[in-house]
Image 1 (spheres, rainbow, N blue to C red):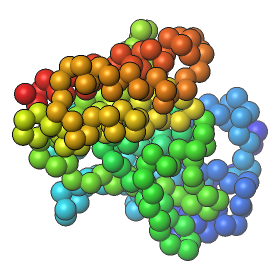
Image 2 (image 1 turned 90 degrees about the vertical axis):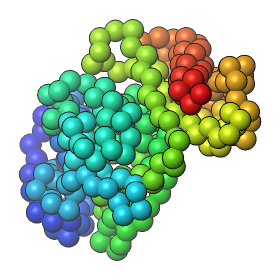
Image 3 (image 1 turned 45 degrees about the vertical axis):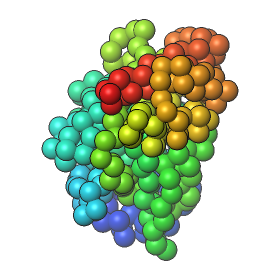
Image 4 (image 1 turned 180 degrees about the horizontal axis):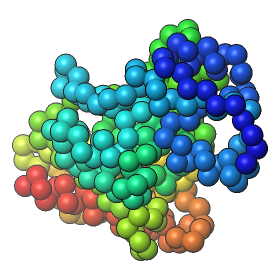
Length: 288
């Protein structure tokens, strides 16, 4: 590991000043669970590491006035897993955070750091996309928002620009009757990355008509996948098992998985279909 200078700002403004001073030679650190590995492997070699642990503006989880939920970037996965606010907003989101690695990692790793790391096999991104999350991003010049499904650009790459910091993930209110699930296909140990994962939110109205649906997948491409073709095939339709099956089959054209130790690209593509169908069927059954 190459030597570097460590900085511990206590405010966002101080953070922005450090990023402005050191430019491309600076690297932000949240919980550090991913960055330490990258440093050890020589994949990143910053001269300056800016730790965010003391920045109070980046901490906390709270319900928004309109009924949504805000998860600040430095909230740990364990905080989110144990949060009464998260539980009240969406119990399936609690279960999603509980799937992240081990308790040791969840106690250290942060939600914002997880998203900024942009590993497509991580658990929170597809769930937060299915919940229609927005990334709140700040810099010296102000704040901007973007849908979370636009935040991920490529493998380990996001839409964050130099000098910017991910401040929070804001989730809108869940309309009454919305049911949510997260499915993680794990052929190996419980703390491993998924072979494929699926998050889905479904609202069924009178007569079994799909009023709204959102589906997102992890470990299925170089970024999390927002399965819009699946959603378009279901929205406004009177749902039954065959419609769910036919719509889930469309996900094979939306994913672009990689061959690795957890399966071939072809196998993962088929598992994306299988687990998308299972997730949606579970939600439909629960709505009956």
